[in-house]
Structures are given as structure tokens and as C-alpha cells.
Amino acid sequence: MRAPYGSGPLAPAALAVRGAALLLALVALAHTLVHGIAEPGLALVFGLLVAAGELVRRGAAAGEREPATLAAAGALAYALLGDSAGRPTTHGALQVIAVVVVAQALAAVPRRACGRRTDADRAARRTLTVGFAAVCFQPLYASGQAERWFGDGPYFPLFPLTVLALTALCDAVLAALLARSAARAEGPGALPPYGSLLVDEVRALTGTGVAIGATGVVTALGVAVAGPWAPAVLCGPLLLTQVSARRYTAVRTTCGQTMASLARATEIAGYTPPGHARRVAALAAAVGRELGLTGPRLTVLEHAALMHDIGQLSLLDPVAGGATARLPAAEQRRIALLGGAVVRRTGAGPEVAAVVERQADPYREQPLAARIVRTVNAYDDLCGESVGGPLRALEQLRLGTGHDHQPQVVEALGRVLARGGLTQSGAG
Image (cartoon, rainbow, N blue to C red):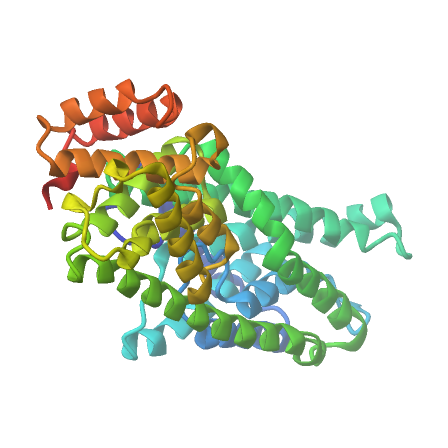
């Protein structure tokens, strides 16, 4: 499965992001120490809001963009804060960065004491994102240029909304860069195109990102009218949303564990070779990334690859080596449909079940995920049969591109294996 941000050896891009965030944090902290804290009450309110948001979060699950929604909204609100109870603020962009950095560092202490992981990449990404928002907003607001552009009436909120849109794009660029660095750390066969990752991150902004950004802007505007007490009221709904998201993540984790256990059932019962499901899932994910799959589509592919053989439990006697391709087409179809029915009961989702159900169809009628699982599964089966090694297995797959395997998927598998040294997938 995919590694989380911050694990494994660091790629140059991740080092650059961390280095830029560290340099920005040091400059902001030094400036704040030298010049003092402006509006210390506001700094304390927003610092506590960011720290509280970090403390109540859990580690990010696979594919989760922002596990600390309250902290992100609080940091954005402070970056976009112009007035407090009708009076202009003077805290400036560097103090915003310093407060956010200190709040994140203080929240990390009890998390580390409880044995919970500190994600350096996410902290660096937030520092740079909040810094970008503050640098775009604070100088223009303090100089009066924003008021000259947008006026002091109903059109003024367009200014923080414009800054918010640019900040969201900046965050998507950084998130895609870090995701690609994490994929690079997994090995040479797991490097998705940067463009696909960026598109996936931009699409994700329509979910939690909208709630975070809207709450940040509304909180900043609320403080401008009502003063420092506004965040306590306006961020309450987002806190409830974060708690609900934690419960959903726990349910999703349980579902993933259930699928992993069911995938091993075919191995324990002797229907498939040991480690077959795990190998197919890992290699299918690498091929999916090679073909540009990211985010939810890649997750569906991984889950379907884990569960693709579960229908074999309906057989009275195991097929030699678990290779159902030797069975009649009608029997293959029956096994696939039974497997899909089992998957639907696990809560994995109809998309995963549909991929499992389509394994016996001609590849021209299959969705891309089903084509990938079919080809990778066949490759692992051929390697397990000792047909002459990975090169010979790939040759046989190429011979089957007329009906059984899509040529583009076979070639993507070949590129992934070539970068990984053509290791024998079925070897254990």
C-alpha cells in the first residue's frame, strides 16, 4: 500500500519543501522575537485554535487530504484577518507564520508523548500554504491597496476569497509534489505522473477543502465585526465535522482490515499461493500509477486486487496454483460474480465489487481497473508456474493481447517491472 507522507527516504522535492518551510519559520520567529507580538490576545486565540485542531486529529488515513480541518481553518483565518471588532490589526504576515509554527510545535509535544506520529511533511506544507496566504493578504490590506481595489462595502469579501483560491492552488501544488516524493520513496515502480496527482488534489478541494476555506474566511470576517470571541462560535461546526470524519476514518480502517483478512482466507484454505493477493495488490497499484490512476480510483484498484480471488472459496476443489484462467468461461464468470457479491457485503463499495465481478469479461468490455487486475493476476500466476521467469511471463501476456489483455496495460506492467529489475512476482 502507499506510504504516508513523511515515511521512507526523502526525495529532493520533499527536502526542498521542508527546507523552504524551515527557512520561512526561522525568519518569522526571529522577526517576531525582535519586534514583539502585535495584538497578543488575537495571537493567543488563533494559536490555541490551531493547537487544539492539531491535538484532536488522528493520523491521516490513506488518501485523506487534511486530517486537521480545525487547525487548517484557524490558520487560514489568522492569515486573512484584517480588522478586529472594527479596528485594523497590525500583526503582519511574519507573525501569522510564527504563531502557526509555534502552535504546531506545541501540539506535537503531547502527541509525541502519546506515541502518535508527527508528520513533518504536512507541517511544512501548512507553513508554506499559510505563509503564502498571509503574504498575499496582509501587505495589501495594511497598505490600503485592497480597499482601493475592492472598496469597503459588500465587494470587499471578494479579496479574501481571491486570496483563498490562490492559496488552495498553492496547497494542491505542494500536496501533489509531496505525494510524488512519497511514491518515489516506495521504489522505482511506483512513480505516478505529477499532472495526474495535481488534478487529483485540485478535485479534492471540492470536498473538505471548501469547508476549510469557507470557515477560514467567515471566521476572519466574524472577528472583524465581533472581535476575538468569533472563532469559538464559528469554528464549532467544523470541530463537529472533524469528529465525524474521525469516526468515518475508523469505520474505513475496519473495512480495510476486513478485506485484508478475507484476502488471506483463500491462501489459508489452499485456493491461492501464499502472498498472492498481497503481491497482486502491490503490483496492480504500481501499474495503476503508471497509467495515471490516483486518489479514489487507485484505492478502488488496490482493494479490488486484494479481493479478486475471493470467489474461489465457492469451488469444491482448489484449482492448481489458483489459476482460474484454465476453467471454462462460464465457471470463471460464476466465480467472479460470487466474489463481487462477497465484496458488496464487506462495505468496500460498489466500485470495488464491480471490478471483481468483471474479471472474467473480455478486456474490451472491462473498466481499466479490472484490466489491470486481470493482467497482473495472470503475470503472478505465470511466474508461480515457473514458465521461464518474468521475461517469459511477459512474453506470454503479450501473446494474449488479442483477447485477454489490453496491450497498454501489459506494456505498463513491463515498464514497472523493468524499473524494478524484473523481479519475479510469484516468488513469494
